[in-house]
Image (cartoon, rainbow, N blue to C red):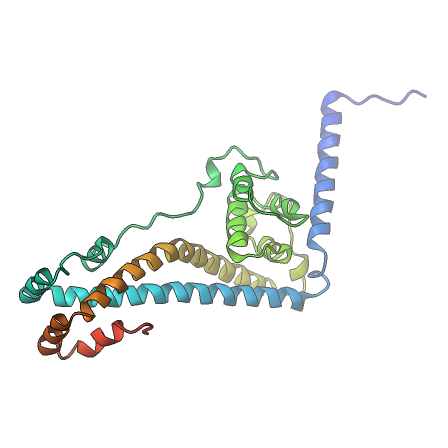
Length: 273
């Protein structure tokens, strides 16, 4: 008996369904190793990464606090007209522009290093967006990385890759965790990569998802601020050190700002809190 020939539309649908089943099988295989066998291992990675992000954010905030303390001190003393005249006579009137902007209530704008949003790229769900390929151009990713990224929408792909590169070295288990704790709205339709979380309650999974999203956003924001803040701090410290190395300036500050002189001294130390 001659086999029945499928119509073009039916054949296309059959192929599409087959591809989808194959993709889901691959995705399941990629999410299964190691962490599916051990929920505690997944939780250990989660806790370690949350801790790492908190420490990084706190370090950047510490840089900015130091910078703001120097700016506050310079603002205080330069409000004194006689002191400004002294600075001019000592060749110290010119300060870094970024410092002047900061204590003038207009902190310098920091340009974000975040790539253009993936929303503008014509990338279909289940595909790798061009922005991800650009970010990974000079990186060597582990086998299975793109299979995992295809489980999430392009905008989430970009965020995951930025987090992955900033973390260094690239870890497939870290990417698995980020995918597993991705909000459902950012997952490709009909994909539910929660094998490692199956033993946890829905409330606990939602709590972890929310905490990781919040920390990831704070981490990426701090990553954008760290470079400019570090450069600003170097320039501000050098200027303040020049002030405190000048004997006439130091005598004036000790005589006219006795209540703040200890702070001025502390700011001139190699490391201050």
